[in-house]
Each structure stands twice: as structure tokens, then as C-alpha cells.
Image (tube, one colour):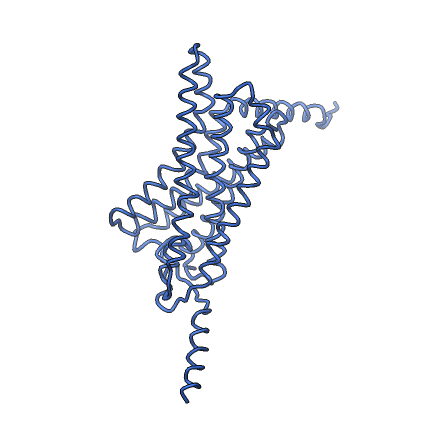
Length: 332
């Protein structure tokens, strides 16, 4: 009898361990006129899609932009586009159409893609900082060091690294048992709010979360800061003010992207860790930090980067010339 009860309890325990719940994404709590916020996010997403698609199209069509630097810029635009696509459409569908339940498998997929493309954005900014470091500190060796092949390898390593790390992060969720609430206090299947719902030991998930935060935020930001300290010293050694100003202009757009990406996200994490903030405030801030930089990045690169502006003019003139030459002939 005892053996039979033990066997039954074991089977029950196994079923509980591998239970796949349907999660409820809580989102905003009783916010008046919240639908206007979701409509605003639709506008943000439309601008993000158009802007990043435009930048990728210009880089693809302009042969002068087929360089190492613009391989990284293309990857940044692609990750911005996909990162916003992983967040905004599902978010708007959930809360604008009251579809806040999400299956276990869809939840894990959503978690993976949001963090995967966020990592690509962060590490691509680091790759662009490396490009600027070599260009300013070692200008004579730039074309020998930062080749298209070298940058393609760097981008490939970034993809593989992000894939492995977040496959592990999401994989560790599958070992958890969810026997309490399945309400996720976030706007997507966020890793922290999900694993904290588990009943069994979550130490491994907590350690993995710390590793991922360090890998995608703090370490890249530290390395970017160090690279710009070195760039600053190199600029001080330039004797001509015009050369110094030209070098600063080449870094301006990248510095703006770095500030927009890292400062809001890190500020939100610091506030969450140090004090209590209302869930609505946390969710709104988090959504904006995930969605506004991808919308502004292509605008900044278009307006601040001379090469892209020149390439746009060349493409426009070429298209206009082709239209004139190949257009219909109107006869009297």
C-alpha cells in the first residue's frame, strides 16, 4: 500500500513538474484611455518599420555603403525592426482586443525573440564602437583591420552568442513547475515575472538572469565607454581643430544611439532594484525603452550620417534618370 501511494505521488509530481500552463499577461492596471496608448504604439511601430526598412534598402542599393561599418548598421536596423515586431504587434493585440491569455509555447517563444533581438541591438552598438575606435585611434590600419569579412564574422559571432545564451535562458524555464498563479505582471512574457511564478527552486534561473543582464547591458556599455575614453585621448592628440571636429561628427550619431538604448533601460533596472514603483509606471517605461530607440535610430542615421544622405541622393537621381529614359513616350 505504501509503495502504491509512493508511486502515485511520484506520477502526480511528474505531471505537476511538466504541466504547461496558459499564462495571463496582466499589462496595465485600470489606466483610463489606455487604448490611446496602444494606438500610439501602433504609430511607433509603423514609423519603425518604414524607417528601418528604408535604411536597409538604401544600404542594399548603394554600392558605396557596402562597407564593414554599414554591415553593422544594416544588422542594427534589422534587429530594431525584428525587436519591435516581437513586442508591439503582440502587445497591441493582447490589450486592444482583450486577448491577454498566451499559451506556454507562445510565451517561451515571445520571451526568446524579445531578448534575442535586444541582445543583437546591444552587441551591434558595441561592434560599431569598435569600428569607430579603430577608425580614429588607428586610421592608417583601419581598412586592413576592419574589413567586410572581419565585420561579417563579428556579426555572425554576435548572432551565435545571442542564440546560445537565450536558448539556455528559455530552456531553463522548462524545468520549472507552475502550481501557483499564472498571471505575468508585465507587458510580455518577461523572464523575471515568469520564473518567479514557479514553485520549485529558481536559483539557476536567477543566476542566468544576472548573467544575461551583464552580457547584454553592463559589459557592452562598459566596453563602449572604454572605447570612447580611448577615442577621447586620441582626439586630444590631434593638432588641427578641423580634424578633431570631423572625427567627433563621425561619432555623434553612434553616441546618440548608445545613449538612447542603454540609459533608459539601465535606469529602469536600477529604479526597480532600489525602490518600489507602480506596475503601470514600470510597464509604460519598459515598453517605451524597448520601442522608441528602434523608431529613432534610422532617423538619426539618416539625418546625421553624410554617407547615407549622399547615397539617398544618388539613388534618387538614378531612379529619376531611369524613369525618364524608360518612361512612356507620349506622341502628338
